[in-house]
Image (tube, rainbow, N blue to C red; front, side, top):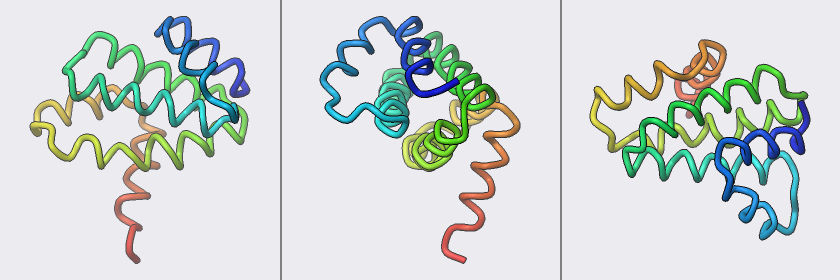
Length: 118
């Protein structure tokens, strides 16, 4: 899956995402993942669990089926941001979020968090 296919899949899940994409001047894997990550952050803040869980599954699918560039964008944008936008969540809510992220992405998250500052 490339970033254009990923954008199409996100739009199927979140129809108004297409409007955001049209506003984005530089459409590339990082821009697509950054915009979707912002959406997920807002879902977390608004406690929109139903759409959040489906979005996390979509991010996992994009990662598992994605080409190298899309995977890098997810690792460097979404995974890197996770700690920041779950920092103020309750422990229970944070555990629920992470329980809906694939083992592969959890490993990448742990590697980023525990190697930071070394």
